Image: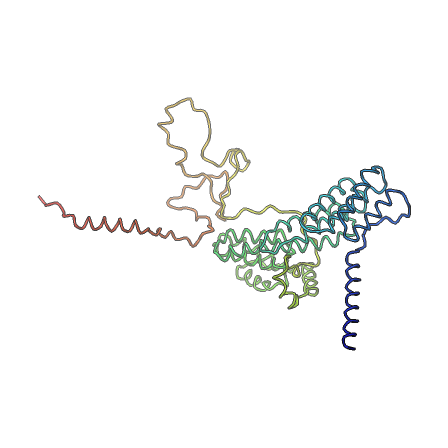
Length: 433
């Protein structure tokens, strides 16, 4: 009997604690209340709507706030009411709620750009896309939107208290985007598509210099240039130089120095600012726990523990460079061509003498006039040297392993060939005269 009483008491206490917790969970205090104590009708409507928002009755709160906006269009609480509508959608969550919240926040920034809450609205728009980011191997649309919105916060509201947090979210977002680009370049490198690999990996280091794998990206890009031949030794040396100078504490710094020494290139000193930044990153790096790693398969968002904790994130988007396998041809009428002409050998004009069509050769059969530079790319406006039997080496290709193997014949073709061979063998040769 006493044990049953103790069990009943414990159960009652547990139910009481659960009810208190649920009540406190549903009543979450609103961040932007109006502290002015007045009994004006619009203020009464606003307070009633805020009470509904705190208790999770978002639809009722939005109806009350819309009544305030439509009835008291000159109210001093009009801006606060529009912000409360956006906050109610943000608290409701879900894909539909987040989309509605973003639209409401954008409207608030458009109509009230000078209010303090405008920076908060932009901050919440940044959070909307940041929380919906997918993993590295998934769609990166939300990560791109999060990067754009956080950049807008830093540019439009540079004195806001949300700028440091937005910069860290920018570094986390750019870590995810850079990792996606790096994996693509590493895949090209593993498949032997060295022009595409070098182009993509160099772009990663140029666009995202704070990326934790920037030195690895430069190392693989330099290796790709080295595998394309001696013509690209300068590009490989530039990547090794950047590793030694900008990433002096990376795993490839000593190897890059050895490569530069073997290539008889100068070894640059390490940048002191880069050394200080990398030391700070190493001291503040936090490794994920075993429990965190085991639960990663159930999480939707990407891992950002390797992202930089200091440094200015990239604020301008660079244009991706052209791979070295693409020939450089000057556009029509550019100054690079001799006399302002084009590098193409085909011209357009009106011919009055119709006999030239039959007497002159086809212009499309003439050899090209663009000469190649030292790195193998075409130099616009320069005539090709008339070398006897000599030709420039071909540009590198993204398919070096293609050997031109014959296409496998079908069974029908094999049977037809066998039948034709048998018929030829049975046919007697003609008698010699």
